[in-house]
Amino acid sequence: MTEQEPAFDLLLQGGHVVDPGNNIYGRTDVAIKDGKIAAISPDIDTSSAAKTVNVDGLYVTPGLIDIHVHVLAYGAWTFPDEYALPNGITTVADAGGAGWRNFEEWKEAVIDKARTRVLVLLNIVGAGMLGTVEQDTSEMQPEPCAQMVQRHRDVIVGIKAAHHDGPGWESVDGAVAAAELSDTFAMIDYHRHPNRTYRELLLEHMRPGDTLTHMYGMGTEIVNGLVIPGRHPQLLDDSDKIHDFVLEARRRGVRFDVGHGGGSFWFRIAKPCMDQGFGPDTISTDVHKGSFFLLRATMPITMSKLMNLGMSLNEAVDRSTRAPAEQIGRPDLGSLSVGADADVAVFELERGEFGFTDSGLARLKGDRRLLCQMTIRAGNVVWDLNGLSRPDWETQGDYVRIED
Image (cartoon, rainbow, N blue to C red):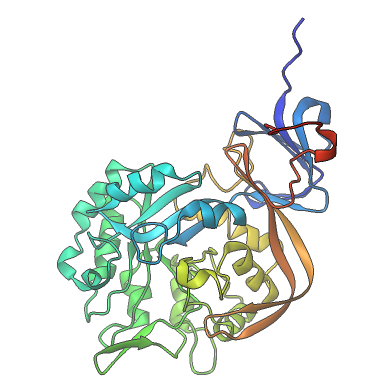
């Protein structure tokens, strides 16, 4: 008689589940089989699992989705696994590093080799995010951009416009047109120019469902022909009140994304916005080599910054799982639904005295911080900070390597 195969490969036992997509909040077990979520229920029998991990006192969430990163083509790109997996992120969307001319080259070089699920917002600029070419309006061609989306719909989920400093709307309008042709959405990284206003962008050039990233940033300005960092918030008037046209844009369906980055998250903007109820639709990092270290623009730290500015943990998880999945048109992601890919993150909510920095290198004092203890991608433990899923060495005898 052969031994019966366990019903589950892995059981996360006793954690506090936060799954906004399924409206599950509380102590619940999560079972995984063959890379899929197999059961989510209190008190699943441990004898039914090949391996049980005790996550009592920790928060279990869907794998985070960061819809604004740089892992392709852009000069400061980072390899996705090294950033994403230690931070509870199982899906990223590269935001405009590659364009339609070079996307397939980067797909082969990075996307096909990563354990992280890498999706793409294709740059309206054919050559992608390669410096001066981003100012070449002849590169902004909606038709070939949309055609590339159609060839790779499993990977390309939207269109990106960024870094255009000219007087016209070619970048924004080209991205929106390509999104219209490909039935996707456009993400806009807006650079100011005296000939273009923020009001026009939100109310006349963006559609319902399109996303404005860098919402708590100040953009750039053109002064005497030079591109310089702006000093005036995009969302706020001189009295630190949300502009009426910004509120109108949200009512019309324009969405607002964090896109922390190196220069786009300022406490002096985020705090008054959040105090007036203007939080993000989605949380993202715009992570790259310039924002990773001093600013710590990772998903858990960006979520922690927002939580210390007044956002609840449940809302921070929602804006990092369910909401971005909806934004990129991937309802199969961002939840712990039975049958979904077993992309799971396990977090500790640390309590104490912490400090966080913004783009101006100013400090925010906080009393809570998210720390990723474990990341599971397609049912496999790919990050385990404290070895929660591993046996104690003293019990293993003369071991060489302990396999899962």
